[in-house]
Length: 114
Length: 112
Image (tube, rainbow over all chains, first blue to last red):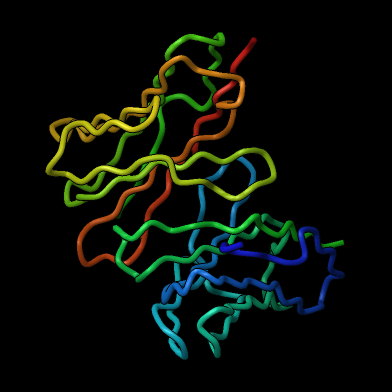
């Protein structure tokens, strides 16, 4: 069963806490992405990784951090520096970082700050 | 800067009708466009894509039209079904730009 998994589906965090969102893919894709989605808005790119041990900031990287130690895993940490972290977080992967390589999305994690 | 927008935030149709979802883009350098479907609480799902050297591309029940003159993209869904109810996003990019720029989305509501 191939695909992208994200966990947990729902996550609650107290203000001031860091939290890590999991993203795993078994599609053997080189590129992985993290997006944030707010109600009524399009997807905004947080970070992306073209290859293992490499990643670049997207449009809204402040308050977030990532790592890419394994090809299949691209965890996202939402730090206490992120001023408005409540959102729906989507992970995607693609064969490569070329925009013409279709990005396949996971089911998402809904983060709520209490 | 790049931007992708949609003309209609919500489109309501009857089952069996044809649906047309529109998208305007501002970057004349964009040469690749893609449509995604997102059901409530789920991740986006690829529908169809088109490159700028094409005006039209057809898939199963879907057709994407590209008008580069007026920088307009549309998604046509034939014989719309209740299962087509979702938010539809267009996105754009161009060769050498390693990101997709997403529009805000159009919600399609299909009544039985």
